[in-house]
Structures are given as structure tokens and as C-alpha cells.
Length: 218
Image (cartoon, rainbow, N blue to C red; front, side, top):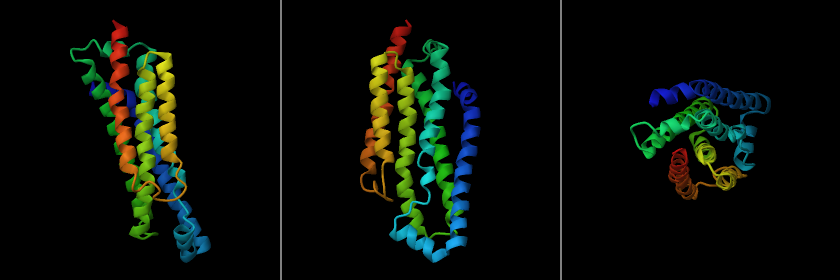
């Protein structure tokens, strides 16, 4: 099953790794350009006092990654009716779904680490640790939005009932929008743990449409 998930995701992983590195390098080059044109002091003052989120192009990157991973992983399985075969393996549906979801979440986590790591390494020579720390607290809700997007798309894809698809889609979209609507840095620093707990509910909910899909497959 792990090898099967790798076959489905390998090209998506390659493309997303390239995209994540591209955006990290783009931010670094943009900062370097601003420092050369405006000077270090002006850029620092603008970032600190005007709350300039110079890394805002990264906002949608984790969510897009979650969307791509879920589409590559689940849409072919469901549309080509291969998802039913998964439930006929000598393992229960919960274990099958857990392996699939675990692989997707693991890839999303590794991509998030790559994004944060490359961003921090490239910009550590330009900004102090305090400013990079605030950037981390600002980016973390975007990363959580990526995980929720992945789980939300998986929910909508696996769920066999149209009405339930609509409900799952609206709830997932609304929650992701909440995580992406911050206007200043570190806006969710003290409430991120609450959003994370709500995000975990999406992980638990995925077993419900999987169970119903198996029942309809019989």
C-alpha cells in the first residue's frame, strides 16, 4: 500500500518540491532587491512598524499543495472505481484509510518543513531571529490551512452522497478561509492551538465517508 501511494504521488511531490523552493528563493530575491534599492534600515522599519509581511506570496502555497496531493491521491481512485478494491484487501477500511491519509499528511508535513527551513535559511542573513520568529508564527496558520485543505478535499472526494459533499466542501472552505484571513503578523499566535484542535476533527471525520463508501461498494 505504501508503494502504491508513492506511485500516485511521486510526480506531485517532485512538482511541489520545485514549487516550494521556487517561492522560497523568490522571497529571498525580493528581499535582497528591496535591501539594495532602499537600504537595510528602511526595510527593517517598514517590516517592523508598518507590519510588512514580505513573505505574503507564501500564503496560498501550503493550501495549493494540500489540494494537489489530495487530487492526485484520491480522485483517480474514486473516478476509476479503484477505491472499492482497497476495501477488499485483507485489512479493515479504517487501516486502509489510515495508511492513505497518513501518507498524504506525511508528505504535506515534509513539504511544510522544507518551506519553513528554506525560508529561514535564506533570510537569516537579512533579518534578526526575532523577526524570523514572528514570520514563523504568521506562516504556521497557512501551513495548518494546507493540512485542512488536504483533508477537506479527501472528504469531498471519498464521500459518496452529493449533499454531504457540499456540506464538507463548504465547511472546509470556510475554515481554510479563516486561517488565511490574517492581516498582520502573529495574528493567531495565541489562538492557533484552538484552530489546530478543530483541524484534528477533519482527520477523524474522514473515516465516516470511508465507512459509507465501503457500505455502498457492497
